[in-house]
Image (cartoon, rainbow, N blue to C red; front, top):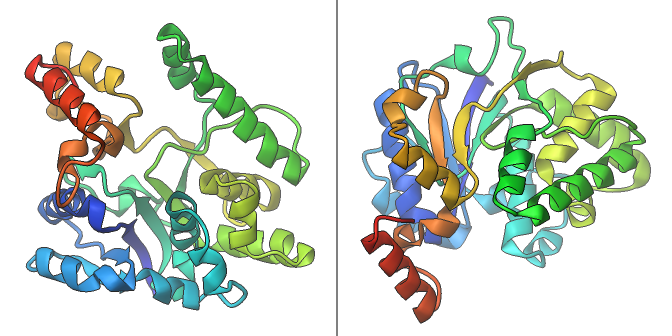
Length: 295
């Protein structure tokens, strides 16, 4: 078992984004950390064709679910894609490929050379994203996005209450995140099994995989808690990227503090495969905004 790996769960709509991610990893992966990509079995051939020559090992999502002893594949198949992918990502550890892994999304891009020290200490302790998301919440209020604050509070309270933890509301993100198999094992053994639950049940109950991991770490301390800030610069919303772009904050400048950046697929729809997604008026609106120099 390797001490560490990079892992991304993807699917065909994100093919172009995944290629961009794989190319950036190939460019900056100075320690040759293994990179795994899982996709639905039916899409493996497509990804093999387009990832040829890139250092990525392809897996089927079904292979990961099959390694989960108490999850019925039919249960996962019946979930919405946005929910089922959380089960797949969080159960990757069961394949026994690495002790810990950086869980990436397809819309990530590496922007500088990186290595194991960016994600773990020399003794193998992972760095865990942990703060109270004040920057995001303040920015949301500034732009009159009160629903962002409401959603954060609701999600935090829901999972904290399941673990019986009172106190401050933490954010255990944003993605990408470093996850350690010992934390997932402790969640399964100490929380899920005593309640006759599997992880698909947990995600169906509260579909926020990062909170399940974070609250399990706080509850059971399977690994030491070493808090860190975001590993990647995450543009949650288009207005954030637009603001930085106008301020002249380039990827070269961001590389002083971050390994990479996240460009949300929701406002980067021209990267959809095989064609830009959304209905006609959405596509037209995006085209006009891009022509005007906006997102």
